[in-house]
Image: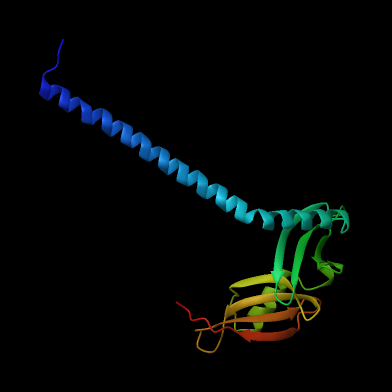
Length: 177
């Protein structure tokens, strides 16, 4: 059976449209996969360093369970790994290029206690972020918050990890949006 000229013209765009949709969907999938692979490769050095820090904390620091591993960058890059030993005791380990420092959390200022000390000294205000860090050659807590001078600038306070005393405050020039 022969199709009339008008019927055959109507069928061609339908086939062409399906092919174009397949090409477009294939291109979108290609872009998505490429993006994911790019992100994974860009993050791979950091993840590799994190795995190495965790391995050191388990081998040399004798931790059996790891809670967190964070890279703190201020005066130098320091990996801070927190976790528990075989007895269930909480520890934090600061991994510097030249040394490994392991401190028992219960004998120092914990994160929750540091948040309470900060809130007491800042009128009940909660920090934006609190991280363990390394400041002036010793373990510290880094607390970022909106400064009390107009709430327009962020500030960073460093507190001693051992006793919670304030070490230094930095006012950041960023504007709150």
